[in-house]
Length: 254
Image 1 (tube, rainbow, N blue to C red):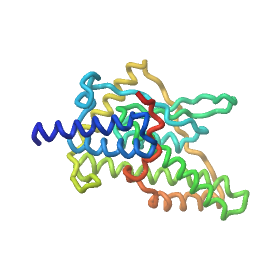
Image 2: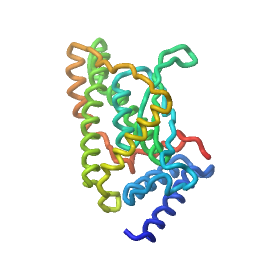
Image 3: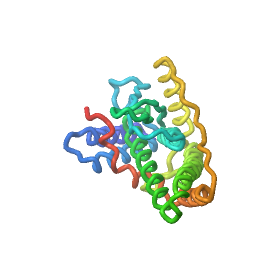
Image 4: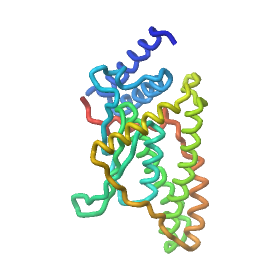
């Protein structure tokens, strides 16, 4: 790859990220621009310091994605979605202004990666919840709660398996952009992202996370929920160019 080609790619990324941060861009336009920027960054192995020389190489930031009722499946999903897009994840157990217990889901990374990771997380959480509620309607009322619990857990575990497979494929250089260009081996980028997140945590003084406990359910509802959840996970799209249309509002405009 020539220096000229690299510089052109960097300029394209700068223009796309300027559009992401523009006050005039709507959420759809900004999210699409962010996805395009990320594809170029991966293809040319561009880092943050190349895009903005005034920021240090390890310039990453935390962003609060969403606050939800506490649930193990959301936390597990957050870890893997963040990793898929070169980010880190942590959650903060707290209460909202009504005194209700919630989990704040946070992601840490570079801006262009945060946009896509945060959008994918919200999309998957909303989709799993919606499908669990829809599926439960076919059962007697007393079986619906256990159905929803096991559906969400099983669906999440299958999605995590698919995400893991995508990450391993990306590390080996087996992914392509939407234009058909084969991406380079991304193992070093994933390793670098993990190191930077760990360093960031140490800089914050470290923090411990509540241990994820798998919910225990029983009965017919749970059996049907687990089976349906696994099947549903294979129908949910993980294509970021399709699923990150609601993301830009998550990041503060500069």
